[in-house]
Image (cartoon, rainbow, N blue to C red; front, side, top):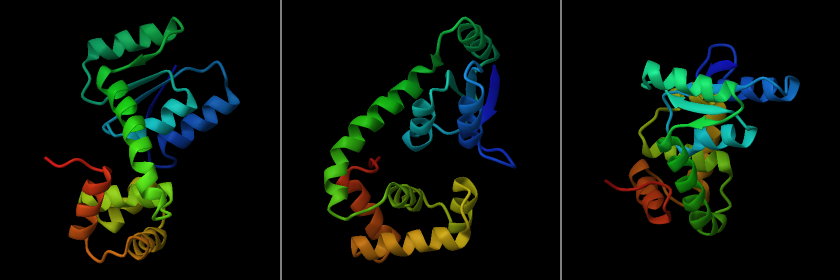
Length: 166
């Protein structure tokens, strides 16, 4: 069993999981992460990771997850499964609207990060992309949507169901 984090210095945990799953089919992977959003959970579920826990999980739950995965099972926290299932439902609802704008998956991810107030530099670190690449994606998002500010983009994201209001 390998315990991975999404945020790692040399390579992110998603890429590490991809390499491990491709090269070592029998290795089990449990992801520990602070991220509890569809954009992070989805690629890991698609890779077939064996467990996903939030970093604030208890020692007892971590040991339980390791035990279940060791015995051939999967362990996903209820909230992780819920995030994944709700993300899939919301993604299908919003895709028809977003398709009209011809936004890529990465551009949608950038919109969500902009509405969360994440800076270009922090996006660069989170997504392992250069600042220049993030800036290009930001420009493309504004050009394709015809919007010109983060406030307008947030309204757009709420209207199409990319984010939820509080």
